[in-house]
Length: 155
Length: 155
Image (cartoon, rainbow over all chains, first blue to last red; front, side, top):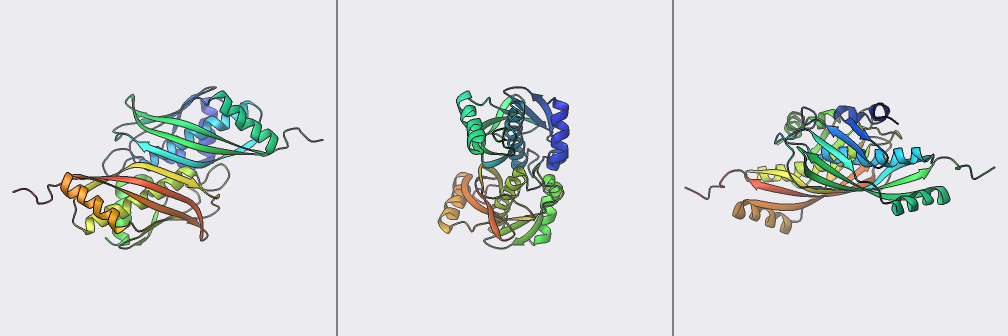
């Protein structure tokens, strides 16, 4: 999927991403970067980024990476978040970005093997949130994928 | 502050709360409950609640509780989130609510003593997210408050 296709998908299926002004910046094999403007949608009472917006952007970046890579590999599954943790390191005074770290091959293999063999897999994704080039928050999420087709194993 | 005043505060200062349709349901001494509709703002690709919306509502509920209680006690401080964790227990198929647990008195005392004596305190808040009366997610957040006045210690 191109950045435009991912943008259209998020806008259609996750309306809060449009409400937040989420922009798909990069979508490549191992990495997804999403951006969001500080103003007006993501402000808090101190005119810095609302922690809920930061968490939501990171959750979306991690989800998008897992979803796209499953799609690339032809694995039909629905991915949802199971746990999310954010450490807020510094207030965010401008537009911000969330970039997912590449997932280690061993973890990815275990994940996809779980889906194709047992119908279910779980994988952890780390995301770094930056503003003005500096890290402002770090995120870790566990995503669970459930197989939605028989993966060609039957019939 | 009444529920109407809190509603007006959130709408003005944290615009995403309006974008999400957040409604202030209960504001009392030890407890804050906020609600959000599933449709249309908080849907995900599976027509259940978007994990980012769930996290944002819980962060807001915890923040509101800390902010209001500090205000009640006449402690002038700015409160921000430092860490947030969400465990998603079940998909949410309808409107959902986030209710903060009362903060233990010992924890609250340590928190306010930190602010008044040292200018800074930290407290953990737990929030339960429910939908249709059942727990759908659990949240824990650490909030940091920085004193914004001298607390009457000088002059």
